[in-house]
Image (cartoon, rainbow, N blue to C red; front, side):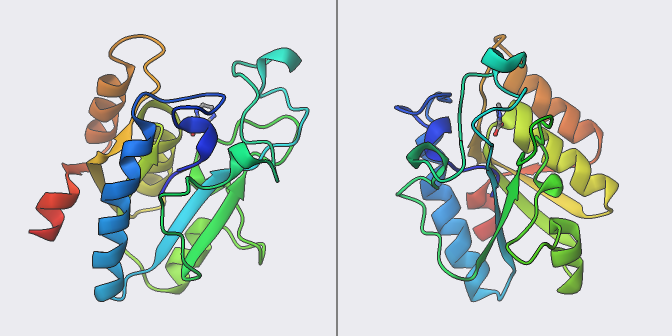
Length: 187
Ligand code: VGL
């Protein structure tokens, strides 16, 4: 689960249209995953107050997901239980860190190391936002040799330019991601 955080949802500082609607399919997918004893992981943007990721310090974005703020919390509808390992990213002042694979757990482990330590070979990916962090995470995952299923109903795009989300999906498909939905996976 990529960055299912308040600031990327309606009412947040960098809202993605219908961003909150990914929580329900992600919750269902987590239940299914738990039944199958799959490994659960979530990334979160965890920025310092001042970072050149933010427009006011030379970057691209409104201030969002500043560590330890409400905006950085996981959306309250998402059932983040203790068995979800959290990977924080973008903690340096000069880092965008769009990819979940740039994150670290509270034990200092990277996502790739964590997943590989469990022998994980396939990932089911959803979250926010399709055209930034989901896309970059999927590209990293494929570089790390995971087989990637993109859960189309469980992600939403920023769409700064109309069509960005659809173009990102096409890129993910081109690099080898399998396009699917939570319903198809659970059927
Ligand atoms: C994201 C824009 C800026 C994302 C993060 O999670 O996709 N988008 N920072």
